[in-house]
Length: 296
Image 1 (cartoon, helix red, strand yellow):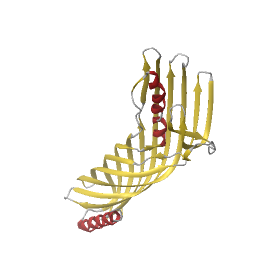
Image 2 (cartoon, rainbow, N blue to C red):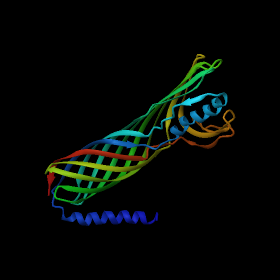
Image 3 (cartoon, rainbow, N blue to C red):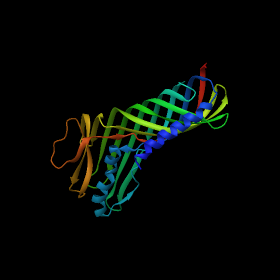
Image 4 (cartoon, rainbow, N blue to C red):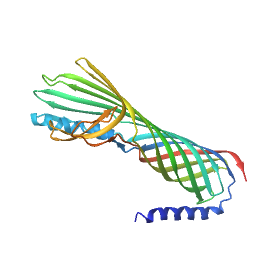
């Protein structure tokens, strides 16, 4: 089944190309602008911050604390795109696009006890991604005004991520505030493909909608983490970001951790590798196309 998928994709493209030979539209140079919504897989940052709940849950539930709220993974995003597109023939087109994706999703959860007060956690993550993409299109007319397209290509992805963590404990003999700020950035490569529909409103103007899927991963991230507690205590570490898992005695389970700088050498660490930021996901966009140069 997996081997037949690439063959099927090639056959679809060839069929579209053959059908599109009947297209009589003049070729040209186009500007495409669009915006929409999308998603990211997230990756190790979601796992790391999500482990806050099982860690405290296993410790505090034994003393009768009850939890309110959940960790909200960083997934949903909005995006905008601009592209210069040139017709290579009456069938094929190619373009260069610059996109911007932004994802934000704040989480707030807490544990409370009628006698021992409460512990609350607030996590505010933000992810900004700028892909530069090379695109190839095959189009086929469905009606004189409506066209369908298949597209695909590759891209360079630059990402900046911030994760602010605030913990407020009101538990007797363990009161205090703990705050950490993580800043990370990196660049990687990805592949994408999708389908589109375009409605021509005039010879030089059209509106369109496109749905696409991207596969992209960043695993060579650099960053900085600043930690501040009530002590007063402040510490800043920076460098390459590492991901690992370890056995936590307090919760009696394996949890995830991250480290900055040199590769960690502590005993008992498993799955030790460079932290991965997963940018794979879907996008759905609507926009318009303007043709500003024409030739036969």
